[in-house]
Image (tube, rainbow, N blue to C red):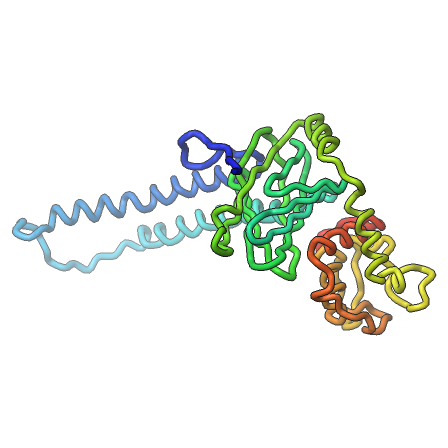
Length: 318
């Protein structure tokens, strides 16, 4: 049986990253502001309930009285406070959705009812994820069956795993330890069992774990074998007889499309190009590539994408 670490009694788990600390701060400040705005209203309601209760002598004559300053104040002040939180939260959102280009990539595959994580060196683990402290980690998330959601409370992060799509989240844990991870999307009868542990380790401890975990080949090397076995090399290599876009240096580059638009070659684009090749046709090429939807399993797809990424390029933010 898998036992999860337990935290001492508190409102939420300790923050394991600087970004999680920022989220805690904005949440706490927002709660204080709400209390300051709402508490006077309830105090005044209680005062009126006592003062004007039935049988109590009070002046109940309706008087037409207006104070423009007060009315403008209670409209403008909350609006300005809302703007502050809007830009504050927007800054955090942009940080959460723009991983640094040097982030270490890990793939996560959700299936009923487990998480499978694969490291760049080929190491794989089920329901546990080992990462080094102080290193940016980008997790590419996919689902093999239904919608799941990878949720790590200590990092204040949650991201959906959607069938047929690649989503991502990134983090840089700055506190070693063991932290819970869950599926937070109801995904079937054993949804509650779809849980594991994030282990944040020192750099040396992580390297020792990689050696102990072992791997016969890297993710990219396994992807190269699958790339050849599925016949991709017959078209996408320089000496192929069929004219197809070159994959060398593709990853992270801006790709011009036949309809005049452009797209950045991310993991999601590479996956879509394999499963739906006629959806985004590269400029100057004919839409002759067949679809591999239903042919390539998600685990193989992750390895092929890792191989294409290893061919070079630079990660760009669209």
